[in-house]
Length: 204
Image (cartoon, rainbow, N blue to C red):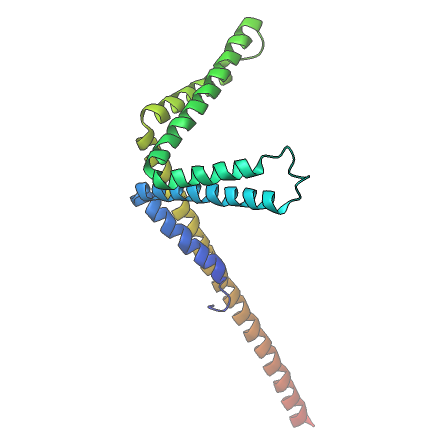
C-alpha cells in the first residue's frame, strides 16, 4: 500500500491540516503571515517592474512609468513589512467600505425598481441588506470579523486536508486489495492448468 499512496497528495493534506489548525487556534498568527506575504509580494512585483524597465530599450520605455511603479511597489512593501499589524488591521476596514458601497449601490437599484414598478425588488433588497450589515461589521468590528474569517478558513483547510489524506489511503487500500485478488485469481488459474496437465499425463 505504501507504494500505491500518492505521497504528494498526502503531504498536501497534512500541510492543509496544519495550516487549518494554526488558523483555527491562533488566527492572529495567520493575520501576521498574511501581512508579511502582502509586503513580500509588493516588493517582488516592484523589483520585477523596475528590472523590466531597465532591460527594455529606451524607445520602448517612452511614456511608460514602470520604474516609478516598481519604486512605489518596493516602498509600499517595505512600509507593510515594518507595519504589519496596522496594515492587517486596515484591510477589513477597507473591505468594509467597499462592501458598504456595493450595498448602497444595490439599495439604489431597489429604489429604481420600485419607482419604475419593474420586477420584484425583494431579492435585491435582501442582498443590499446583507452587504450593508457585513460592511458595518467589518468597519466597526474589524478584528473580530477577521478572526472569525480565519477560523472559518481554518475549518475549511482542516476538512480539506483530512479528507484528502483519507481518500488517498482509502483508494490505496482498494487498489492493493484489487491487485491481491487479481494475483490470487491468476495464481489459481495457473494451478488449475497445472493440475489438468498432471491428470492428462496420468491418463496417458
